[in-house]
Image (cartoon, rainbow, N blue to C red):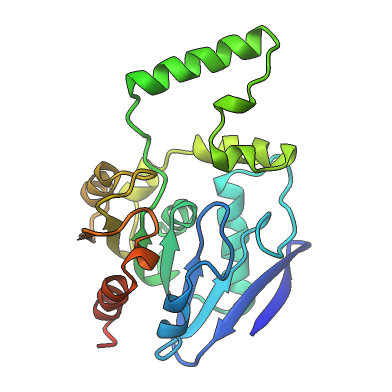
Length: 241
């Protein structure tokens, strides 16, 4: 069932299904509350599952142009308070993982956390990327179009959301990972090219109470690529098997 609530004046949509302990799902950049597909319905057998539309996506209001990952984290924290979801379990994908890393520093906010292909680790800087950045800066300096240099995630956004995106992708959260107090399971697709496996291994080293499961046939959306395996891993970690 789709509902909405106002969080700090921003209309915020979410859907909720099931009964019992709360489970919160946080989608990735460009996604929405429906992107978890069959996993949402599967978990609703055991939990009261809430899936949120981040601001600027799905049906929720757009964020201010000045927003960054920490703004999203504060809004998500206020959403959790508004719905009384404290001490919930959490599954966060990609950008949702950035938000989760910030919030997982808070005691008693989450019980168990699954970070699926989480963003937030500073990427390795390849020669190819270095050259591309140099070309972008040169084109910008010469007043030429820079549209072709952006990622698809960037190109598909409005001008205001492009500003937000630039801030978000430059929020590196290794210090937050070191301070994480929740029990964390990292679930990663071996074929993930968006947040490569080396990022999972680094998070695994940084987060004290963490484990890592690699899904061999999975990419960045491993919860859809191999739903059966991802679902069984989640059921086992959350103790519902």
